[in-house]
Length: 261
Image 1 (cartoon, rainbow, N blue to C red):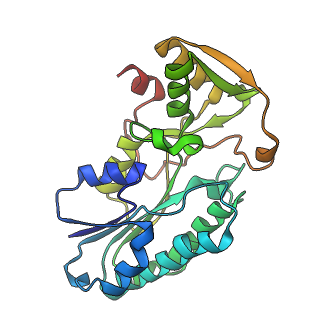
Image 2 (image 1 turned 180 degrees about the vertical axis):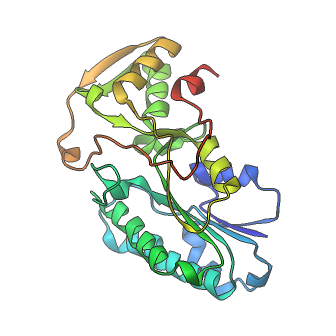
């Protein structure tokens, strides 16, 4: 059987649909009770740890630590004890406004970095563990995320509801490495890499401006330019690009292909 945390989340739901073996679903509100009551660890073939408080603007450090760090470390204790392979959802937010250099800009990113450091220091204690630093994941099923949704989904929703989309001024200078959720699931479940910490994006960033123009063209609407919000200044990633040298020759779906499908 497989343990899947965060199974009701945007990415977790996609994993759930892709798994053939029996799945134990673990959600945030029930995660510690699960650890205290579950007694079939010897039957578990994989832990897919996708659950977390993922808001990059969450300011409650205690809550973030409780769910993103404390629970994860306890779950990993069982993985080590019973030698269960682990696939963990980390985040490219650990890089902040850099490419490949650790520079977290928010508390959420710090919690992901804490776990990555633990993994790095304890690789040899696991039977197998892969941490994937997800870049900007998008796709069908994220509409409920509101402001935390990708601009691809957010812009599309705005066009559908109002006929125009709101775009920050200067968005031609904001480039992100957007990766379709279907590719995320495929790579995580089917790669042959050894234990380690890996970027997971396309390595081909495009600007918010280009995304907006593609959406306006395919869905018929207009762009409304708005001022950049004060509360995001200094905490907004200007450029993200994954290092995908570890996964050669993978044919990632582009934003344009996604919008035209």
